[in-house]
Image (cartoon, one colour):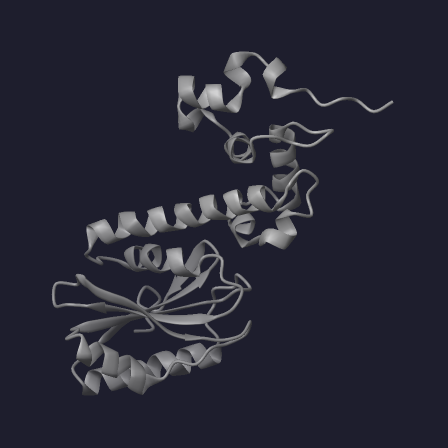
Length: 230
């Protein structure tokens, strides 16, 4: 005989996600409980919290992996329709944008970690490689963050002429390069090293130094500057 799900309405008030959020605050809720609030309801055999736990189990309890799920993949879970899938996707995107907004507030880049945080919002859950640049003024304050190119799973093209034209057009004093490795491996390839050296040398000639090149792999990063490569 199948066991019936335990309805959230039958739980003690302190265990219900919405009530828990109101009485104890957002930090008291688990990831599953926060997702359950987005879902609103579960399915015939699972409460919203149980359904959320099931989703998280399938992605190794990793919110970065959750942000990579599209509507089709989310709808494979029983009880998830298009509306619920869109709610999850929208919430994950707001989280990414909030992180970026906090970084922009600081405006100044003082370390490789600052640069990583700025680029992460745009590259954290990308399935393909993209190449971005950050243009800075003399005080290392952000002028612009620009997408240079989009590529495939294993590579993208970074055109030096385009990069330095954009930097000159925006009166930049220095440049930070960045691209992602969808595989999660943050170690630079031979082509990454060659490109970095090429752009570094070109920057010296133009008195427009490339001060770092960040490689992002999910929630980790590699900095050429930190590792002595620039």
